[in-house]
Length: 123
Image: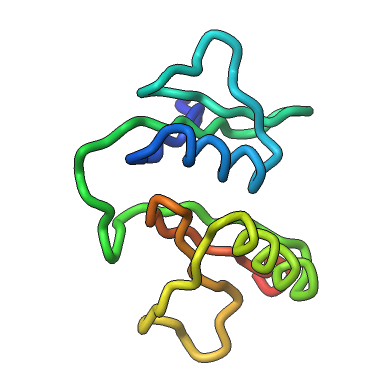
């Protein structure tokens, strides 16, 4: 049986990407896997899926086929996390595909990669 070990995200600027995602997720670089063109981040404590950042020359997709969903446990936490992520450099994305009464908000990291912050209490 297969499991997801690492999710890979393309970045233009490794230092900027590492800084944002470390602060966003509380992850740390995996020992021996941090360089100018490839860095694996993993949870500082406990277990979880790792996030690898890979320098990429391809442009960010306006409507990516894959993205991250970051879960908050309540609407209050979701709103607080959105504010925190924006303070770290994320931006709101004008997303025309929101359903009526969405449980998620689309943001982009400083590199332009889209991700959602989801109120998981509504799932």
